[in-house]
Structures are given as C-alpha cells and as structure tokens.
Amino acid sequence: MTMCMLPKNVGVIIPAYNESANLAITLRTLKKVPIIKDILVIDDGSWDDTGDIALKEGVTLLSLDKNQGKGNALQMGVKYLYNKIIVFLDADIGDSAKEVTKLISPILQDKAEVTIGKIAFTPGKGGFGLVKGLSQVGFKSLTGKECHSILSGQRAFKREILTHELLSYRGYGIEFGMTVDLALKNVRIVEVPMDIRHRITGRDLKGFRHRGKQFWDILKVILQKKIKMHYLKRVD
Image (cartoon, rainbow, N blue to C red; front, side, top):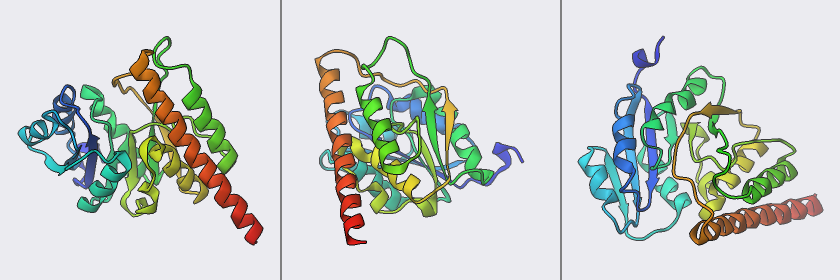
C-alpha cells in the first residue's frame, strides 16, 4: 500500500520560538504530505509573528504566554494530539520537511517504535563537535549502546511510547534524556538518514553561547542519571 493510500493518522508537533522566517514554508510543505492528519504549532512565547503565521497557514496553534523550553512545549503538544503516530519536527527545516515520510515509514511497517532523523554532517560549519562528542560518550556510558543522532529534533513515535516522564527534561537536555530513557527500556529505535536542511548555529559569540548551554544541559542529565544509577545499585 502506498503512502498516499494509507489512512491519515499522523500528527505533527512543531515547537517554535521566534521562527517567523522559516515556519511558513515548513508548514506549506507538510500540508502536502497526504498521510498527515494534524499539524500543531506550539508557539513557545515568541515575540515575533510566529503564531500569526501558523494561523494564516491554517494549522492548529497553541500559544504559551512565556518561553518555557522545548520539553514543556512538547509535553503540551502531546496532550492535544491522539494520533497513532506522533512526529516532532523543528520549525526551521523548510521544504526539506517532505522528508518526514522517511520517519513515518518504519513505524507503519512495524520495523520501529521510534525513529530518529539522521542528518549528514556539514563540513566546515557549526561547532567543533564537543556537544556531539559529550552526548555520544554519555549515551554509551549510560546505556551501553550507540546512537549517532541523539541530538536530532526530527523524530516519530508510536503514540503509546510517549509518556510524561519521557518529555520531562529541561532545556537542550530533552533529546538526549528521552533517547537514553528509550534505550534503557529497550524500545525499538531506528535512525533514519534524512536530507534535512535547517539553520546551523555559527561560530560567533551567539553560537558559542548556544553550544555552551547545550553542553551544560546535557551534562546535567548525564550526572543526574549517573547519581540515580549509583543510588539504585546501592539499594539493591
């Protein structure tokens, strides 16, 4: 059965904070994907016209009074959608949002319970690999497994997999924390190569601050989980 013949039972959640420059083309692209039933934008306290763009494009909008972080936005979104498959996408991926079908297919074929978009590295752009290195070392240390796309925001889930606890992480620790939890529960995860194009954080002061916050948020999750594991071992 082709993708266009399948029943519409996919919901897409897009957390967005000041994404007016990129959101419209992302939404227009997603609306052309036949299997998608619902598109929900969580305007996470934006001060630009992110919310107005979502309304103009005819998708569902949930506006939060103040910026509370991606984890909170995703928690709110999951409460609103009950589709059998839930997809998380970044707001800035533009027309490459058509790649979403690659995330959905393995779940429809029951080859995965969760899929994570694996995006090719762009040489000469972005940071120096410290955040990615920390996340992969931390993931291996906590789970004994490997995952190359731990920080990817492009993900799809069987609805029953998504729990409040899975989305309870703060700041930039959300993708790392949820992936560790999924791996520890032996959930079937498939990394899916995707040709996704989105805004890359540069090597300017703003970029270094961004990556510094990422590094710290992920490190906090690693330390918290290490402490918890140590305590549980002592109790046993």
